[in-house]
Image 1 (cartoon, rainbow, N blue to C red):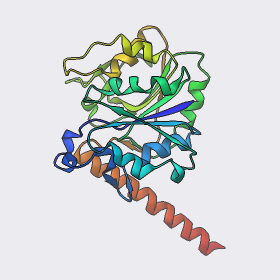
Image 2 (image 1 turned 60 degrees about the vertical axis):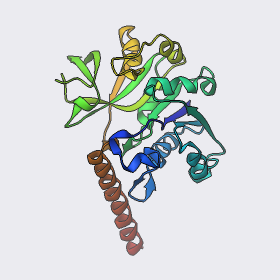
Image 3 (image 1 turned 180 degrees about the horizontal axis):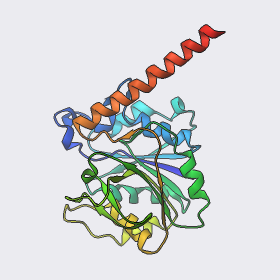
Length: 252
């Protein structure tokens, strides 16, 4: 399985911070934001990874990440997105890299406390289709929201004004090789973008979409409030790990 980190966009909700740099290069506690989704893929056992970015700061990703050595990788791949066409528009640039293989796509501002390896293993048991991750959140209207009939998802609504559930589709998606054919059928939404929710619904309507509910903390970092939450979550995790390390050392 290959991994794709989508780290383009203008980051307009974080202006003026993003006037001079890409959102995904902003710090989350002690590391640049893009480090966290990259590490999530690596911890799930994914070694072949593509970064899709754009804008005037695209070259900074190469300068920062280089060949991926800091993550134990032999090489990183890069693709450039021109303009602002939405998540699915950025995803289509990964088609040559994917080469027909299954992929795990993660949005570059997603910060997860726990590993996605269990979700990867679940997806690998599927013969075809897609798997998405869900999380209960206080503001689901900011995201794609699943509509349930019992435990079955019947549709996913993009940023609904009145959400039908408290779950959000977080920015981690597992897809089979048909995903790029599906992207080619999309038409721009009212926002003028190719929506990843339309991709997920295409799998859903064919009975090929499964889901898993993510354990542990999760947040995006696309607003000032969520950027603060991400920093707080990472800081607490780092400090807890340091406390545990010191306790183990003193017990020897």
